[in-house]
Amino acid sequence: MVYFNERDLCYNSIYPHNNSWTMSRIELDACAECDLLLTPARPAVGDKARCPRCGYLLQRPRKQSVARTFALSLTGLILILPANLLPLVGIKVLGNTRDGTLWSGVLTLYREDMWAIAILVFLSSILVPLINIVLSVLVSGHLYFRRPNRYLPYWMRWLQHLEEWAMLEVYMLGIIVACVKLASMADLRFGFGLYAFIALLIVNALLASCLDPYLFWRRIEQLQHNHRHEN
Amino acid sequence: MKTEMNALAQGFVRCHDCGCLTKIPAANRPRHCRLCGSPLHARQANSLQRTLALLISAFLLYIPANLYPIMTVTQLTAGEPHTIIGGIIELIKGDMLPIAILVLVASILVPLLKLLGIALLLLCVHYRWQVDAHKWTVMYRIIAFVGRWSMLDIFMISILVSLVDLGGIARVIAGPAATAFAAVVVLTMFAAKSFDPRLIWDNQR
Ligand SMILES: [Zn+2]
Ligand SMILES: [Zn+2]
Image (cartoon, rainbow over all chains, first blue to last red; front, side):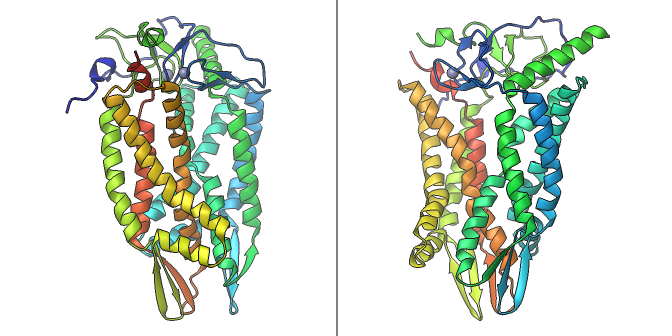
């Protein structure tokens, strides 16, 4: 079988990144999903710029995007601790009580030799959400205080790649389904961890709507560029 | 007629991570984005081959994921293994229809439609079908968005095993299908990520 030959189009690299700024910035954009060449739009705050051909969301500038992202991610960082450590739900059956935290599910699965699932649940409900929050604190903090840092683009890249692997909202749905299943056989108690968890969910949703990758990349570009010219 | 407006046809490569455009580098030039340092590809490297490999693995694992029990509920002494479908039937019997539909969508329909959808996308690009590329891009977007919600069943099991562990009275143990199902979800997520929707547009005349 002959596949569509992509080798001509790909630029596999053997060269290390050398940060050369010799090439001037090209004042054009391309759509990420249909590759249409575009002149950059300047949508008003609160508006959205979409690709005219495929409808891909190109830009969605928000009011005080950087400051809000910084504030929200700091809030998230504080909430992550109680959401992880305090019990989410507890059950009471025939005098026996048990509390479940984010960690207890992972540990029980691990003890039952379901280590693959234990790792997956650990990554998607504990580690990746934590890394994402830390990364958005770092990125938005540096942008907010206008501190250039050579790792800034790397943090932003990781933030974008890890985004879909943080699955707190799916976990919340899992909690709801589990509670419905248990409701008939046991008394349920909701712990403080659950409230922290829901607050964290809301913060995450607001973060996602505040953080416009297009704007952030342009800010990073400016910052790194100015820094280079000062030195 | 459509591809002439593409950045690639005009001699530009878009960085997949930060979105800035670069002139197609000459053979001996560094091929990293000057802003973010990620390797430059006009299209994702070996997109079709990678997606196909992930898709086949996911499809094969989808079979044990549905045949084996995903969890075993032990009450007093009687153990009762549940498959994914068994769990849904249980919910319907317990008069919890909305939740049953939710689980049905998340753990059966979504993975199945994802497998079929990605297969269609691959066929479309490989055989250079002349299609309404906009509609197919929307389909790709839905597939990419919806994938993570299938983790619902896995998270539910993780909560149940830690809560329902009451010694001899009741216990929930995760079954072998859980691992297979989790692998299906992860593999289809990677498959959606490695597929490059720009390939659909490249083939339109
Ligand atoms: Zn487009
Ligand atoms: Zn880049």
